[in-house]
Length: 430
Image (cartoon, rainbow, N blue to C red):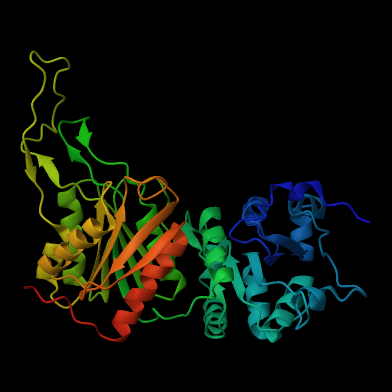
């Protein structure tokens, strides 16, 4: 009896991907160096991983390394074991998802044309026939990615239901998407293959904290990491939105760096509101999701050109004034845009939270409110998990228990899509 491979000790039997099987198809891109990290992170979530390598990939990385990483023998050629059918055929115990990562221009074009001359392309063709979800993560020089035939082939595959993650366009290269983005998106796809229900839509999102400067080096802020807003942005991308614009404070997580994502970096509440207003004036957005932790107060005097002396006699007194409400300014700027706002409370009862959120929804003429209690453990701000209440204009609501923010984001987008399809009107101010 073969012993369990020691590398599988990191697999969490209760992880979000426990019981799932993923086939990682590796091709000849230098981004192959990221493959080990991707495999290991998927395994930490509980997934069983299998690796298939093209000949070009084997020239860049020894299969033994990926055997170690996955804990399973690597497929480097197709033999009498009929590996392509065993992994991706319409058979019992096939894999749940094919991840072609990294994917070269050559492999993408071969897949689009149905050419099977490597273990990778044959496995993918087999997966197409078995209707297994396919995710492609491109990585190549930008001039190759920008080839009109390559772009046409990518469009063809998208129309056939293939999900593309990335690339990041940096330093004149179409770089592989960040490891955490790939892992998060694969997790969402494999748990619940997303509908392409935001195709043709444009979504504006705020995320992260704002900073209100006292002087040139000191400021008032909050512990927001930006995880919730960025998770919503990633979900919108995954579901096919034509444009996702993120107005982003100084969060601690990387925003998605895809072609259809626009990131506007800001610091202060004033900057955030100005950018939101400008975007709503210049672009017709279908929805605005205000997920940023925006400061409610700012110093009346901003000594930004200097530094207030330390240890002032008698201490330092700050006089604060209220900041404008972003959602109010957004509604004035575009009376028709669908607005989903967030309401954070601290150690309140469920009824108090619902009542306060609903009051804000009516006051600012919003379509949807997401409320959460950041005073409770593992909820909101720096945490990777959240518990929320999605509240409607008629005060009905849906409770989403404590869950990973990526999955919470999916629930929020589900509701927004449902309302956009029904052309739900804003709440009526009373």
